[in-house]
Length: 246
Image (tube, rainbow, N blue to C red; front, side):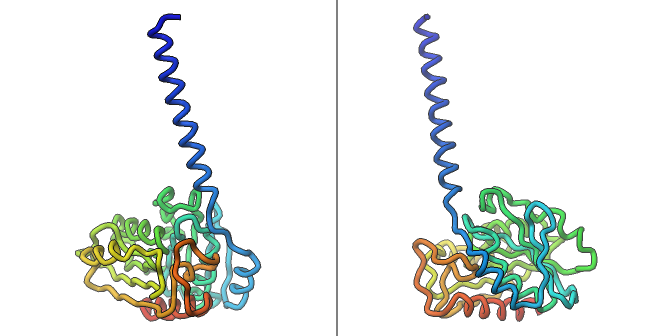
């Protein structure tokens, strides 16, 4: 075998080795995510006047039993968090007459499924008002989706999140909620994003709340210690969201 062929074979082998290594690292990374305890989620949701249905591709539809169709909310989960962790807060909202759509994200990362909201508005012609919403990284992706579909949405709801795209001139309403003990939210980026916020923006800080307690998936690495319960943070966030929606 010539020296040139040997060099080519060694180069290809090296590239394949790097690809295999990076692929392995990726799958190890995405396999480590925050899981939920099903009985905790089921027990909480059972206390709410809602129905929960799977409507395809693991997407959940959470509706209030009064079916007043006040508005629809499409919610993007936080990064590397099992999506059902957000059933409790969405059930708390839905029982007041709202329809909430909770899609499952590829590898539990909204950045890998940024267009998961596609098509849902058309399935509910009876609902005239829609909001994008999300937690943490999911909120960033949700805001970006709304910025690209301004004609479809009335507003954006960010839980421990902020918009990455400039929507300051958009005719959107926005609600930003975070906990005072949140140590995961990057405050510098959050504050820097304020120049991108639409004029009609409401900001609310939950005293004693942290990053993880918008969902029900336990403690998150690097987060602060909440001085209120998970249930209380969901209650306070729900009340502010309902006030915003009304």
